[in-house]
Every structure is written in C-alpha cells, then in structure tokens.
Image (cartoon, rainbow, N blue to C red):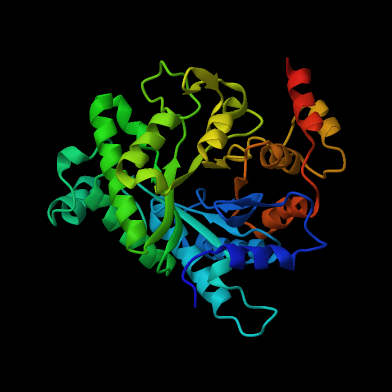
Length: 372
C-alpha cells in the first residue's frame, strides 16, 4: 500500500467527483491534484469534545471533495494531529470498494517550529522544555527564540512525533512554521544559517522517505514590507533550498494568509526576482512554488456583515462565509485555500462551493474597483 499522496491517487480521488465538482475545484500542483478548499485545524479547545468534532469534520470533508488536510504539531497541544490521525485510520480501514479512502488520495500537511507541549498547557513550561528537549540533547536553550526552534535535531524530533500523532509513515508536506518570528531576535545572517540548516535536515527527511516535500508556513514574512524586520524574500529562501538540495530541491510549497481583509499576496509588489518587483503570488509562480493560503475567513471575522457589493460580485452564494471563501480559492495563483472547520455543519456549508465553478477574474477584480 502506498505511504503518501500520489499523482495517480489524487487523480482517482478527483475523478470520483466527476460531474459533481465545479470547474477548477481540483487543480494540479507538484504532480498532485489538490482540492481548492482545504481543512485547517488551528482553532478549538484542547478537549475531547473538540477532538471528536474534528474527527467528524475530517471524515465529512473528505466525503465532500476536500483532499487537503492541514495541521501543525502545536495546534491544540498536538491534539489536532491526533484527531486527524484517528479519522484517517478509520477512513483507510473502511471495508467496501465505494466507502474506502486510500492513503494515496489524501494530501496531509503539518508544521514544526513552535514548542507544542502535550495535550494541554503545562504548569511549568520551562521545565517541560528542559526535560523534553534540552536534557536529552535535542536542542540547547540558546536555540529557542520565544518558544520557537528550527535546529535540525529539533525538527527531526518534531517530525517523528508528528508521524506518530498522525499515524502516517510519510507526510506529504512539512512546513517550517513561521520561521520569520526569529528575525525579531537574531541577526538576519544567523537566521539564514539556521534556515539553511533546517532545509538540509528536511532534504534528508525526503531522502529517508519521511516527507515528500517541504516549505515554509508564514504569517507576516512573505506579505510584509522589505523594510520590516520579519520580511522574507521568497527568491532568497528558495536559493537556500537550492544550496542544500541542488536544482532538484524539495522546497515546493509556501503557506501564507490571504483573504478579503489581507490581500497583500496579490496586490503588494514586495518580492523581487532580479530587478523586477512583484507580489508573492506572481513570484511563487515564476519560481515553481505552490501557494496554499490560510485564514480564508480570518478566524470567523469574515462570516457576517460583509459589504453588499461583495454579495453582488458573487451571486447565488448563500452566506458571507461562502463569499469570502470563494474569493480566496478563486484568486489566480492560489491552489488551495485553507479554512478552519471543526464542525460538520461548517464543512457542509463551505464544501457546497466545491460543486460550483471558481469566480471569474472579472468578479474578483470588481471588488478592488469598488473598494478603491
């Protein structure tokens, strides 16, 4: 049985929805067929009720045409990864040709960098770090920057824990989580050395069959001004990967927030390739990097009371949540728009969009004309 998502497996998954999925819902990136809507697992309490809700949400989402599941080891103190793992185990073990989902059909992404703790917030977080990472020699105290670490040994330890949590031999996409957060504490030259070493470790993880590709999941880095201390140049980051992995390096995906209130990825020309300035979506396209966006609903802030002209631009949609998600998933250069979904009702509402075509560029850009 295949241990990871494959071109044939994801194509087979997409083919199941032939005649039901709207035009553009499945797009090919890095050889895989990705759903335009992905399920995120950031929000929620660290309790059993939320665990059960995520398990049900993952199962329902996969049944409705969502084959991209995103998490991080620190989400809900490792509980999001574990909930996904249990849902996937049940799906992969189902009997019957029609009911069974194969590992090769589902794209699983997780992230490492932040100290995740285990099940809940400890009474002594410094003691937890000491006992879990420093005393065993996984990391040194000076390797941590505000609870964040990206040294090779630490990332390898976190990757192994994520594989156990998810119950997977191989993870499809592994992100270095918000690496730019360290730039406010350490010099940029040292940061680049740390990121280069992290990429070398992840290239080794690819060679060992533990992950298929890697990238960076960011909040500020790729969308902020080059003058800001936590700015990331995508061209420079890709060059670091090229230094350690050669022309066939496995740095293939970036993640960043993009929504109706945060449009910098499309509109801010803060990235440079040679002497040409451009937004990160265009830069990623030129560099062969797939873009997955996060915060499509901005933590539920875009689910109600949107201006009337947005409803006019997206006729036929039932809710502001659908309109905000339609905007994010339809933007050229975006392959998958992640939306946090811990409730089956939200899954069903959002995945109704999977049956509809993407918005046209005229619909999208009419929003910018109205907001000027």
